[in-house]
Image: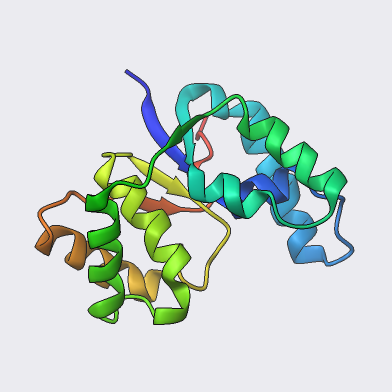
Amino acid sequence: MKAKVYIETTVISYLTARSSRDIVVAGHQQITRDWWEDCSEQFDIVASQLVLQEASIGDCKLVQERLKVLEKMTLLETSEDALVLSENLLDSGALPKKASGDALHIAIAVTNEIDYLVTWNCKHLANATIRTRIEEICRLSNYKPTIICTPEELLEVG
C-alpha cells in the first residue's frame, strides 16, 4: 500500500508558478517539479477543500493551472474533528492565531491519518522548532501526528 501524502497549497503553487528570479524560490520550484515528476507516483496524493480554496486566489491563468493539478486529486473534507484539533493547535500556542489556515491543514491531514504533509511553508509547518509541539498536541488529542516535510525531504533516495 502506498503512503498517503497531503499536498499543501505552497507545493501546488511552486509546481505551477512561473520561474522565479529569486534563486532560493527558483530552487524550491525546481525541486518541486523534480519531486512531482520522479516521486509523486509512489504516493497516494490528496489535498483538501482548503487547498482548493487557497489555490483559487490570484492570477486567473495561474489559478487555472493550479486547479488543473488539483482536479486529479482526492479532496478531503474539513471534519468537525479537524476543526477541534485545529483549535487545539492554536489554543495551545503550538501555532500562532494568525496561522489558523496552517493549523487546519495539519488537522485535516492528521484526522484523515495521512502519512506526510508536504509543504514549502517553513514558517508554521515544516519548521523543526515547532514540529515537536505540534506532534505533542496531536498525541494529547489522541491522534498520530503526520510527518510534516518539504518535497526535498521526501525525495526517494536511490
